[in-house]
Image 1: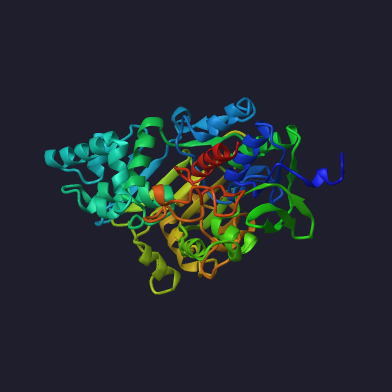
Image 2 (image 1 turned 135 degrees about the vertical axis):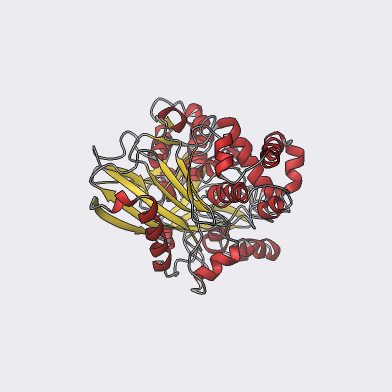
Length: 486
C-alpha cells in the first residue's frame, strides 16, 4: 500500500462510543474505508465493559430499553452479527425488577413489575377508590394512545408541569411516573424533560417492554460491532487521543493525534460530544458566532454517584431494586443546591442492581451490586453526602448486603466519567451520564441533527438526533448520521 494511502480514509470517526461505533461499522459495511479512533483500549465509550477478577461490568449501571425491537437488534442484523452477541431479555429471565415505594408516613410498599401496571401496584401507589383508579386508567390510556402529532406539541412543557395539570392522580403514581420516565430514563430532572419525551418513552416501554442486557456486557456488544471496520478494510485505532479535527476553507480535511500523526478524510464524524467538538477539537473560529454560542449554551444532563460492591455470595435475586420515596421528584435547582453544599440528599430515588445474574458477567456465586443516585454533573462535587444517603437507605432496604459479604468497594462519581467518556471542557461540566440533556429547548426538533456548518463534519451519539434511553439514543443517532452520509 502507498504510504500516503495508509493515512487516508473515506471517513474518520472520532470516538468509539455507541454512536461512533454504530456509524463507523455501518459505513464500513457499506463499502467506505473507515478509521475509528478512541482514547480507550476498546469500544463502548462510557459503557465499555470492564473485565476484572472474573467480572464483566460497566462503570455505571445500565438496563437497556426497549427490551425488544431495539436499535441494537437492528444494528447486529444489518451487520450480520446477530449470532455473535446474545441479548438477555428480562421478561424471559424473570428479572424485571422490584420497586420499593416509601409513602410519606414511612411505609415501604414492595411493587413487583412482573404484572406490569397492575391494580395492586396502583393501590400501593395511593389509588384508594374507584375515582382514583379511573383517573389513573384514563391517564394510562391517554398516554398509550396519544398520536405522534399531539405528542410533538408537548416539547415546550416539562413532564412535571404536564403531570401537575392532570387532576386526581394519587401522589404515589405522580412520583412513580416522573421518577421513572423523567429522571430515571433520561438522567435529567422532570422539570426539564419535555412531556413529549416522557410520553414517547412510556409508549416505547408499553409496546416493546423494558429491560435488556447482553452476555459478556453491553460494551462487548460494541466490541463485536466495531470489528466490522477492520473486516471491511478500515482501521481501529485504540489508545489514541485525537488532538484536533482539521479544517481548511470551511471543509473538514482530517484529524491530528496527540502525538502529531495526521490522518486525512473528506468526512469526519465526532462522537466526542458536540461542545467538545466545536469548541475544542475544531475551534469556534471555524463556526459562525450564532452557532458557537448556541453550542456553548447547551446544558448537561445529570450524573451518577454511588457504590460498586463486589460480594462473595449472591445477594440480589432480581436485576434491580428501585427505591423511590414519595416526593422524590427533585427539580434541577435542587440538584444544584446539593452540588453547592447548601442541601443534602433527603428524598431521592436510589437504584440498586446487578448484572451478575447474566451469563458471562460474574464468577460463580459472586455478585457486583450497584447502589447509585443522580447528582450534578460537576466533577468537583463533594460526593460524601450522597454516599452517606445511599448507604443509609440501602442498609434499610437491603440489610443482607452489609452482613459481611462485601469483598471490595469502589466509588463511582462524576470525576470518573471523563476518563472513559467525553472530556470536561467547562467548569462544572464533564460528569454527565450521556451528554447534553434531553431538556426543553434541546429535544425533539430542537436537538442537533448531526450535521454542522462545517462541510463534511458531523456529530453522532447522545448529543445529536436519535431518541431513547442512553445507549439506544446513541445507536439511533448512528443510523441517522449514516443515512446522511452513505
